[in-house]
Image 1 (cartoon, rainbow over the protein chains, first blue to last red):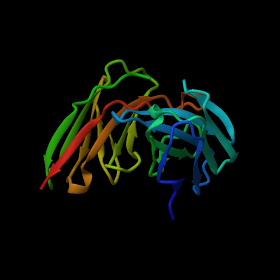
Image 2: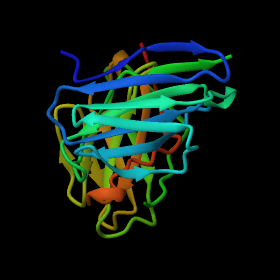
Image 3: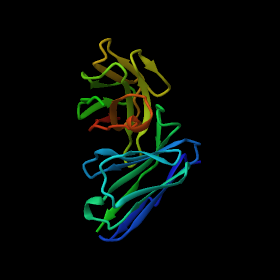
Image 4: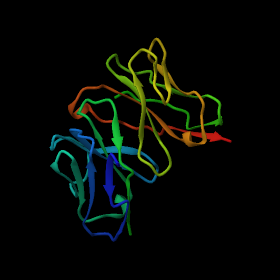
Length: 113
Length: 113
């Protein structure tokens, strides 16, 4: 069973569209994250939720809106997509907010054309 | 979180030990040293972490100098599947907004047959 699963794995879309990436973890973890890895391979945190509550919100355009319907899911919705949003987006989870080990999904490669 | 410095790339012969260095000269007393790796086209994977004592698990060993200003990750018998970017990260283990992994540029370890 996949511990942290993201869908879709690949997403190609036009500028201006709205899209969502879904993430689910079956580890029973309380904390989930979204990271972005850009074309230069820099990996940066975007958001973190603990028990459905937002605890980290880095400097991210408000076109990006995370939603956590329950603690096993953290979806990422992006409005008005721009070329610069093209990246690989990774979802992750950890047992709790101060836990030592984070488990990452396989990533979603978003290409905006 | 303290910044870390790693060599951009290293080579290692298959079956030999891979020693990956990391400098973290501004580390503070309550910051841990973490190592993650990212195999091509996959999400980051936790390897090991430590505070001041040397640590070993089934994947690797972590050697932290007495002054804690540097550390070395050791893969005792590198295989081709260990080819990846290895990230050294320092952070506190508190919860909340401090619970984020700040990835640098890492070291690309290429294991040669």
